[in-house]
Structures are given as C-alpha cells and as structure tokens.
Image 1: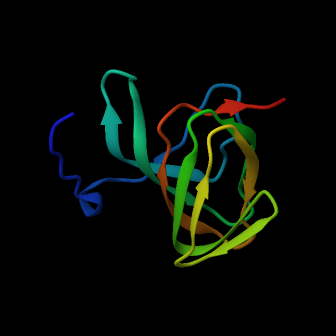
Image 2: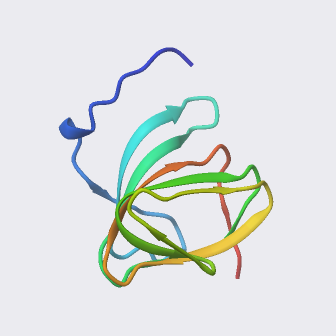
Length: 114
C-alpha cells in the first residue's frame, strides 16, 4: 500500500451492510482499504443509541479507540478516550445504550459466531 490521506470530514456516513448480520443503527466511514484483501482495515463506526453487533471472533485481533460516547465490548465498558486491544482469536459482542463513534483497526475479517 502507498501513502494515503483520508479526509473524514469530506466523507458521508454510510450504513454498515454485512450479509446475514443485523447492523441496524451502525454507519461507517472507511479510512483505509486493502486492495489485496478487498476489505477495509481501518474505519470509523458510528453506533446509534441501542444498536449492537453480534458475538464474533477476530482471527488477527482488533484495536478500538472510542472517539465519543460509550460502548460495552463483551464485559468491558469503554468511554470517550478509551483504547482497547483485542488479541488474535478473541471474541466479543458490542452494544451501546447511548450511542458512540469508534475508530477500528481490524487486520482480518471477523467471523460471526452463531
């Protein structure tokens, strides 16, 4: 990959759409797209109040930074300014009561757990 600047203020929030996954109330802004893997590796997610993402595993880990609001990641409560590193193979679901905006770095696609 080459150097890239993404001006998030110039991007519109787009509904997060994943086949077979309820992503109601979640919007995304893609920051970095890996053309080889054909997927974003860094992105912003905005969760509306009451929205959630189902239990899933991170084969290559995950990093989350809370830009604003609050979210529950598994048993962990995260608030504005908090950073969470999840090691490869870790699992969790996410839920927000009040809404939030998060920065994600996810090197590999997640696997939804049924």
